Image (tube, rainbow over all chains, first blue to last red; front, side, top):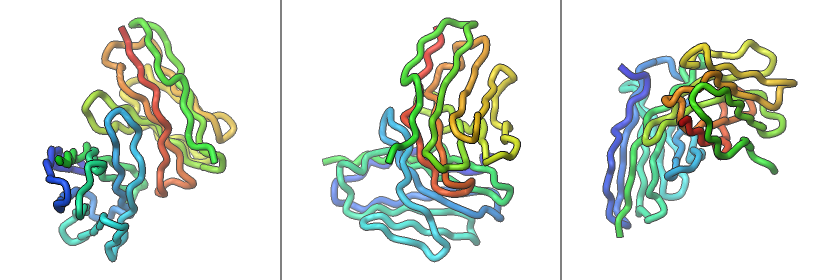
Length: 109
Length: 113
């Protein structure tokens, strides 16, 4: 079983709609969590950190559920420019960095 | 300020040759990471450096791969006797400290013929 798992998608989302997806992690003592986005043939870029209390940045909301060991990302009012692959990143208790394989989101006109 | 830079941006080599990939991290960042990403795949962790500590080499796929970081700044990833399966994008990232936000370079696209 992988340390960090994501639904690869693609999630096909009409422009203006809301999309949400999760990332599960296996190490219950994991410390830090991040969402990155990666555009085709580009490097990953930080989208947002994920805090215990949940956090919001504009149209993006990240949540952490420690009991069920997953983090989520919700995108409201989807834009065409939101089309990308969203990578989940988890630092475990030993400082090991784990990347999910990514969830592809395709926003359609 | 300047971000993470990598060179070369593209590298084509013949099977069996050695290649060196370079990464210049953001100034002041103590942690530096190398990843590999094959076409359509996720990131594969290779190695990371944190300050003067011994590097975590647990992700290196074989002994043909090695990396060093000189003076706590520039890092070089060396692949000896390249194989076709080494073809991928090699990404470097740095962070102020391990566990903090990573900033990625544009990557080096390696093609082994």
